Image: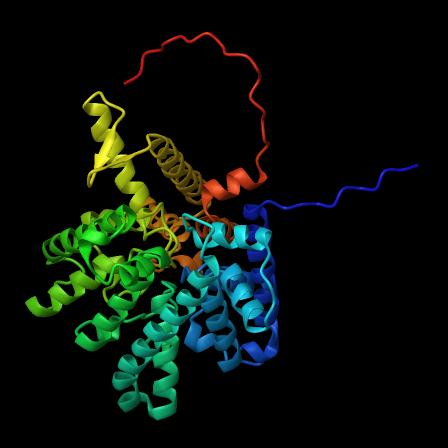
Length: 448
């Protein structure tokens, strides 16, 4: 008698990855439809795949201007891809299931825990409801504030639509915009001195990039700093430093470069926005092609670090960056004890953080090497582009639409890897090797 084939059981990471692939594929098919383009014609599939990946992975890199190429239907498809991709596919599926009165089993709760990057399984449905409520509140407030500026300029209904689109895009750290009406691929450069637009977009980016776990902890502790968990304290501290210090640096570095014609106040506002958006939103109020070499390098570093775990942002994450710094300091002191805030971190986190940083850096360097071999652009521009893609940032010096198809495919892969996580992708489909029941003899080698 033949044995029945075993039912394929996907791991949580595999489930999430395949879910994103299916989501991107459906989005790309919808964007190919003639109704999705303003011309009423079919859009080349690679353009649709690139746009769908960028939206679902909340990146913001585009090969056609969103406002000028896509119709209202196409723009709404992109907006839905951004919203679902920002919250996470499993979060949205769970919200729908809960609304329909369906029970969420242990397996799907585990997948949801991995997807939302939380620390424990208990209370995961409560967290999903909190994510949904917080998203509605923040995006709603952002839309109202932005509509105050856009309605007088564009008319009531169009102004409200623009407010909603840019609020969702900012909160989800996507970087898609409809400002092609002010000039193709102009992003928010038309509003470089507008306090309302700059601060609203910037704070939506910051809130979206803090992470859902941090929101919950702030609410549960009733904003008492002493009651906050260590994760929240690290996230808030690192974010503050990565906003304040780059703001000061951009203010002086770009004085005679991308901000040379701006007043002192406008330069301060632009510097603040430029320190926020690389982590990882994709909007810009300055001409990125005019950045100084130092400013470009600083932006690349910020894109590489990214936002915080369990958020709408990408990059290696702020906590990963902090753990590497703490591990380095501990090694210099010749100890394996990492103490912060009267708590000790497991040194295993250092190994995991270094793995994540190495995987991201390796992907960036490999992609940059290949694209440099086929494109005529400078190393600075291509490195900026590849870091932006894997960091799901969306900033560009303007070369994205001009790249060859092979380079665009590489960027698609980088955006996908950046959204699902390089380590998650490696573990999901890598070979699982069992440790042999044998300890090999230890031998030292020279390093450093």
